[in-house]
Image 1 (cartoon, rainbow, N blue to C red):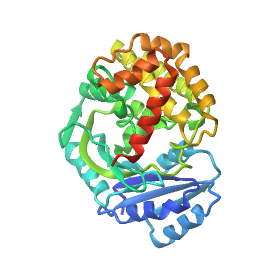
Image 2: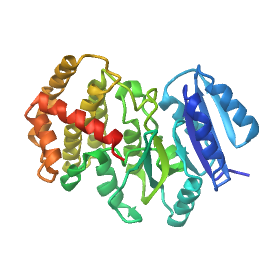
Image 3: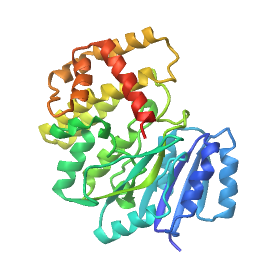
Length: 355
């Protein structure tokens, strides 16, 4: 029987978490699944664990390849998928049992190209739901998809700037179900993380959403995003993150020019660059960066003195932000490094410990 949903799982050295992930997929209430698990050159026993699961459940398609990165693994999964809809799950995360049944049946009933749910960030000792200030279900069709969703993926405008923590909350791929034909017909692929550092999800979604005619948002947390794995591609210290993010901005700029999108898209990208000083700062002060505090301060100073960032802040409007975020981005705009550093330490502590 042909599967209804193909789920692509890129795997690299995640043996402590893989069973939890695969158990959550094999126990889905939607049983007609194809789980394409791509072992991307693991050396910690993840490949052997995957083979044991595949021997017990024929819905698991175990693929083994030399290490090429998460984007290469996902792209191979896309090529192998046989279902009409495709989803992505990271191997250290897990899904609620009803996740894919809910997304799939919504996609059919709404004739949607993309369906998205919300998620819970898991910190080991506690979980924090990512709450979206929206109704239980929202549908975007035709021009709305580009005007509201695509533009939001590029960056925030006006009142959206007040919530920088939502900058990339819409851009995750593991919270969504896509029509396979949408991805394949328009040759949407993931770009190598060695090029852009992070946010390959957002770039993938910018291209996918551009071609979508209907997008449905379900305000229910069906996905669990594990934030404790220091080996994850979204965790740890990345010394060249600023340079790679500027490569990302270049890809987005070229996309906006190629598609001749309105001027507000460029302002949205400008705002993204400003808000991303938060991510660059948190990366710099992360525990993975073993440099002394003075060295971290100097690196933060280099970030805030970057010409492109300074130019972006000249056009940045923070009036809609809360007083805390106005203070934080005021430190960034006027390059007060010590205040910027202290606020980063407070933000990092709050996001990890406040339940």
